[in-house]
Image (tube, rainbow, N blue to C red; front, side):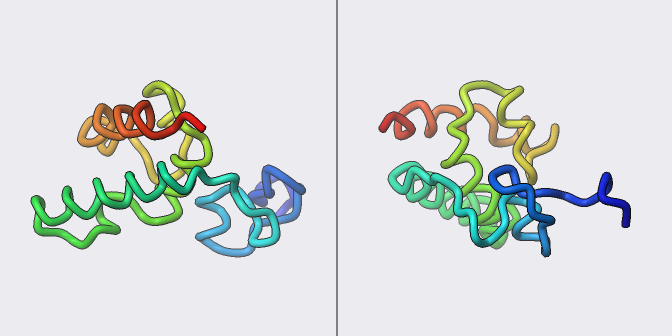
Length: 108
């Protein structure tokens, strides 16, 4: 692949090696600055949503997507859509709830 098509770490510009790194937009050496309280609130919400929908939790959002939300602390739909793993459908299904959780738990 040409260097233009490689996904690069947002912190150090190294090429990203796998799907988890690409979803986080960070290499494994550059951890996200994750708000742990927010991450745990999102995980609890995801668990409840998955139980209600009778699907595995990762179907709602993967841990990597929740980490990205907890790191980026999006304030609106446009910021949510910049996160890998969130598209129009997931925004429509969960956006209001996720933004509410971020607003309640995202202040450090």
